[in-house]
Image (cartoon, rainbow, N blue to C red; front, side, top):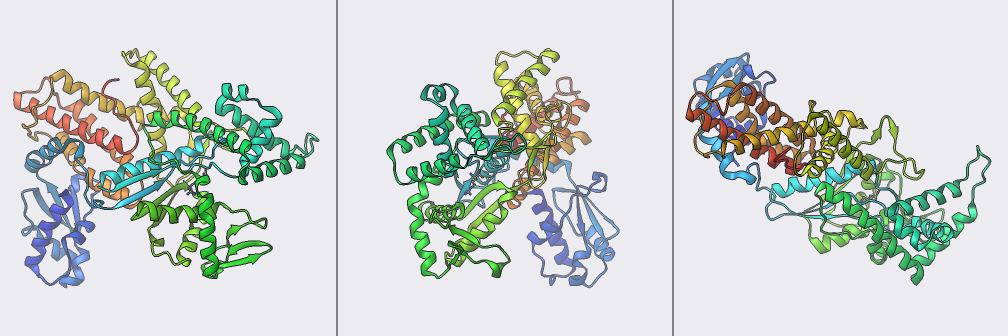
Length: 577
Ligand code: ARG
């Protein structure tokens, strides 16, 4: 896609070439140097001429002054030189003749890129641990992961989403023990995942005991749990059947949450799938002489890389989290032939990924550089950290339910009623949480405050979803738009279109930085520009028919861009509210 920056860069390059063709800059580099001035009165784009000073052997001020008369293009309305900067205004005529028609013509494909074509990306995200609660801490991996998937698809990549379920490990020994002690088939059938979590929490608490209350720790339960997991590992039929059942119950529950978010996966192959794929990698580690025995455990020494050792086998010979990740990566490379494998987890796992990525490199796999870890910060609720094992957790499901209820209340207060009220409340409630979460840079720690997320007048999901619905309703009231007539008659119209035409650049930047918040913030820019246009420029009562037709097309263009951007961050398009 021809972005506005590229087009202006070509024009600047042509101008610079006339000053002196031997400068060594290409259009791409010039495009990268172009800035969006914070104050639009200064121009829509600014070019810092000092970057050419050395190559052209002139001062920035001289360069800017010389270029003023040389930079010309239909897309450029005016060029001024201010203190070594070249300030460029985009021509209204160009916005009308090129940008808006392109948006209307491309529709759902507007903003799409092609640089990913022919390339495959596998994304490992969400990946909850079965039978442990699916809580607010998983929101990050789930929505960042899915958003990255959508972004990559939009750039032409062939994407494969993997939910690497934590469906193996000692927690199943605990769960089986707890189930036999305190549970029953009917109880779990009725209570579903909540019952499983309850059993899991109960046994963890029992194992720990409570010194303050004088309750002793139960080592016997810890031993029994280990024994049950060992039985599971060695193929005990009864334990395997229980395990399968537990996984199935959990998956059913997760799928409800995924459905609310509009998320699907291509594969649910979890940790258990890799059990028989680890020995070959352990063998390879041995052959490469990478394994060292340390206090009975097998490790890969990473001290040369300033990292603690990567644990491969415990003293009792059992495998570990990194062992499985290595086996899974090899399997995925061989099966899916990825060009890039993205893993989205909390930043607490940074060291884990750095370690096993390094081990893959040391093992001699040439594709180690294609592994990408995308971390994110922690989420707390009202300042409280969310623990997993204590039972003191906020489930994602409950958080969504609460948001949906609150949205219903707010709508009732505002007197908003629709046929599909439940559907709207779900779209807006879930959307509010997703949007709030994705508004921040992913590395930032977030304190979740529900009322902020649901503030219909703030920079929130409800605000942008209502803006989208407003655009839809303008169009349906008018019976649609003609798709042709466009005139830029005022500043608000120009500002809206200038905002819309940055979409493609934002998509590229969000992919380059693995940062969905760039899309979220862009959506806020569009919503603000659209609302300003909507409030200041009469549409239905416009002064003449052409202006009215044009404003309807601008509305349709804003709706298109908003809708496409919503798709990229798991926000539902709310046609009616
Ligand atoms: N199940 C893990 C957890 O909840 C996340 C798995 C991330 N993916 C991976 N390939 N290690 O902490």
